Length: 236
Image (cartoon, rainbow, N blue to C red; front, side, top):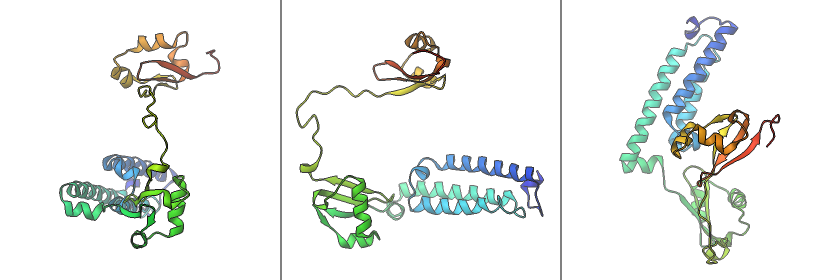
């Protein structure tokens, strides 16, 4: 475990072992922090990600630095991060600080220049974001806001919104959700348990194929199994 401590020099194997430990450690830390910090970087998330990246990067590139201090610091920061998240859910003042309300940029087709400056955005950037939402004319926008996560929410005037079957009073089919039940020859036991079926039922649904020869198969809300991809040596 000498590679764990600061050294004058490290061998290639010791560098590899240090990298593996750092990688596994960061995965554990990311799991502790939860999906929020991965899916979107808000103010607190950005600070913690930037700090953790610098802390763990140094001992992975400098043999004179040990991993122990960086790992203790990282765990401490993660605990502080999780505490701050919990407090900001309980204390309205902290919630306002860490997750400020969205900034209204467009209201009834009119641009709010004051809020645009408050969000530190340029008009060119705003129009680029509108184009990503397939909006070519600002006058068609009923409401647009800059969200704390750094995304633009856009709602069109009702005259420009797509027509739905409900608007046309047309009959619709029930929503049918499809999920993968076999991937690369492995069945999803949790999904089978969820729909109240077993291995024998699944095998009967894909006969004459075997589960090992199916690359992708899905099951829908009606419990209909569909094979999408099989190994080339097999015939559909």
